Length: 540
Image (tube, one colour):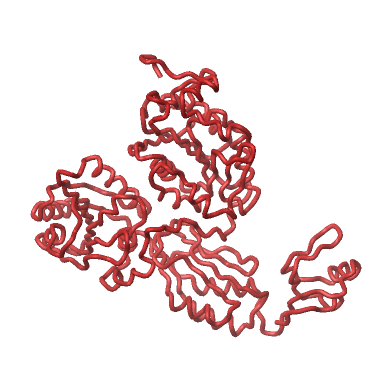
């Protein structure tokens, strides 16, 4: 390929290197110039142009990207059409991404203009997630280089599909461990299992003693479990501790104890009559990513995990600061075909209100939660979810006749993150984006929601759309589906401010006026807005 300046009258058939304006139209970078284009450019005063001219044997950027992506495709992958020298690969089904790192590195070292990037090897991916992209930097490449890269990448990327498992859970008890903590541990585990279609078929809660744990494992095996997970009330600190000793007593074997991933160090891997056995570290009681996820996902996808695999996890295994930013390089679904949902957070305890549940307060004759739910139902959205928690029955009663899905968050006392997670998990599989609304913002109307939706649909880079009041950020916030994983990994009551901060280039602000910051958290704010709290003994 020849690149550089070329007389305008000799540029027909060449590729324009830079965007160039003509009266009434613009020729984009990468446009193949026609004779008519060259005549118009010369008439506008352009005596020369910077262009790329293909030589015999050259392969154009789109064809080259397509050849590389197709060569790399293994089982479980889909592809899109090449555009601007890029072709993306997507997961057909949920599973674990498996990459041949040496093959990818070899292809990337053939020529600087050849780039092939993937998500991290052994990442858990949902159906439709972009997992790899082939990008050609220049407008064309010699065919010999493209062929060499094809050969290097042959079958380098695949998806190991999840295999639904019947999970038996053993949880041990000690006096310090609350039953509510054990209940939450099971719910967090069930959330982890959901993407694979796996489920807990039974849970045995037993004393933190070797024989009790061994008998619990054998019982679950008899009841049809094909995968065992053990949560000890006390961490495993030695090969002869309760959980590994119990596995020995049950007739199984410990494959490996410990892992160079933090959090997740105290993991135990073993087997019982061919069934995988995972002794969970204490950090697995939290939904935040840890080493337990790395091993669990691989096993659920049918990938063998042995000591050499675990001991190789140290590089990248420091997870104290987890990057949550997705890789928003693919084109999102455009126009009205994008399906958008609403998630209304109505689970909180209203602690700043001093006792009553503010969502049951009335304004203009309707409960606050009713105002928000009616706005969402009138906004032509694909789905509306109301997450309940504190006084769930009373809150649900006020919206029961609307076209909403009620989802209960039993961990509402832990903060907003649990409600966001419950809402995301309840979304239909084909939802492209979700608007997260607070249940105590009654002045948010369907017109405001329509503005957020319009901003999302109008620009491929509008992946997070925030409502503002006089330029100050507020609520609600619309999230593209590529951030759903980040939202489900939130913890506490801090919301998703850090996700927004990490993605400034994909945030769009939409002015909707004072409603975006009208916060009815206190009795004074409620009364100032014209609302009233239910009196003691008054039906809510």
